[in-house]
Figure 1 (spheres, one colour):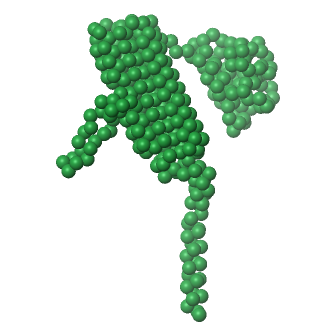
Figure 2 (tube, rainbow, N blue to C red):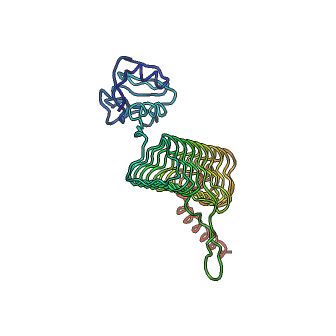
Figure 3 (cartoon, helix red, strand yellow):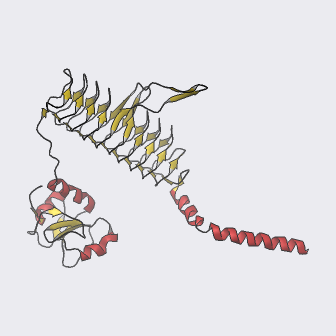
Length: 342
């Protein structure tokens, strides 16, 4: 836990301005409902303004123009980012000192100088683990794999042979990089497995959530580019390419050979079918299935995914279908009666 801060120190840390008592001391961050007089909280969404007004927080991070009577405030352009910054102050990640636990297994020709290898971690022949990287219990680094500097592989995270991680990559428990791609050739005798002999390349500052999988390519490279963040239970298929700073939320997936541009967002359970390109900055709604290309900056939703504005109109109309059906049937009956009377 980091040291307590005055509000003036918090403002300097986040690039904000104090409105109130700059000498007030806060010791940690808590939610609006749980915060007390010694706590800092934040208001990132105006829908929680009533909670902010009821809060017992000593001070609140707010956006410009937000008024809270009788509450010390730190005004900052982006309260949510500021919240993240002060969380890093009070809850820094502390990597243990470098060293190899005698209960781990490291191949004689592996290079792990400057890394921390915990008990029961496993490092294969010819692998490289960068300085400042931390392999926790049960983590596996396959033969010939390359792990960059200051990474963290949490318990049971796996990087298979020949795969590459950049610097500051974080694999949560059970994440698997470089498992077999799903490739089979149908035949009268069944499905003939296609050997997956490609690799996976993960850029810098990537985070991959618990039990998520990035499969190796059949021939070339599956890529997750720098700054991308993958939630828990996410699937990236063989030879797919996930663009820089993209976000893939829980249960979302990208099939083989598809491409996500820079800054793409896949909401929870969204799926992109194989061999499809999604342009820079595009957004795909919850539980949607992308079956054709999406233009840069596009917003699509539904199964199959269509332009979001069109989907919203269709979704609104869906609630009226029952009454519309009844009306149509009445009209059909009335038309039939008119025709019989002629």
